[in-house]
Image (cartoon, rainbow, N blue to C red):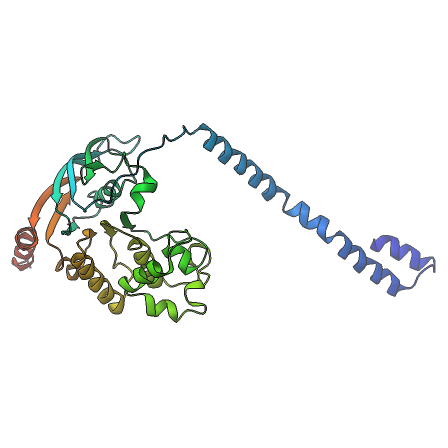
Length: 316
C-alpha cells in the first residue's frame, strides 16, 4: 500500500497526505483478517479438543438408573481399605480399618506422603479402592450414585478449586440452590459477613478459579460449599492451611456446630488447635494405621517420643 502510494505521489497523481490516509484505511480494513489469522491455530486446537471430549463421553458406558437411598445417619465404617496408584508398585494405603458413629469427629494426622489425602478421597467416593470398603450407613460410597451421594457428603480438598461464577453459585455447587441454604452454609462457615462486604455480595463474580479472592477467602468460601445442604459426613483436608486467626476461629465454631448437629467429621490437620475438638484421632504412617482411638489416649502416645527426643541432651 505504501509502495503504491509513493509511486502515485511521484507521478503527481495524489498528495503525500492521501498516501498516509490510504495506508491507515487499508490497515483498519485488514485488521479483522489479521486477527483471524493470528487466532486460527487456537481456534483449530479448541475444535480438536471439543471433538476429543465428545469422543470420550460417547465411549463412556451409560450409567444405570439407581434407586435413591434414604438420608444416612452418618455412621462411617472402613474395612481393610487399600489403594494403589495406577502404574505404581507400592500401595498408598493398606489395611485401614476403623469406625465412627454418627456425630463423632476424627482427626487424621501423620507425616507427609502417609496417605491422608488419598484416604479422604476414598471416604467421599472420589476414588475407588483396590481392596476393602468405605461405607456410610452400610452403603459402599464407591458404589453409591454420585448425584444421590453428593447431597449427604461435604468435602474440602487440600487444593481449593473454585469455578468461574458468583459466590452464590460456588457455595451451591454450581446449582441454582436455595437462598436460605446458601446463607445458612455461609453463616455456618463464618463467611457470611465477609461475603456481604464484597462488591456485589453473594452475586460477586470471583473470576477464573477465584482469582478475585485472596487465598483465605477462597478457602472459607470452599468451606461453605462443603457445608452446603443436608450433609451427614464432612471431610476437610487441612481446612485451616490458608486461614488467619479470625478464619481459624470461625472454623473452630463451625466444627463445634456440626458436632452439635450430629454430623460426622473427618479433619486432616497439622495444627493442634483443631485436634482439640476431635473425639478420636487416627495416625497414618507409610500408608498404614499407626494409632487409632480416643483423642486423649492417642495424642499423648504419638507425641511423647518426639518430646523425649527434643529434651534429650545434644552432643557439643
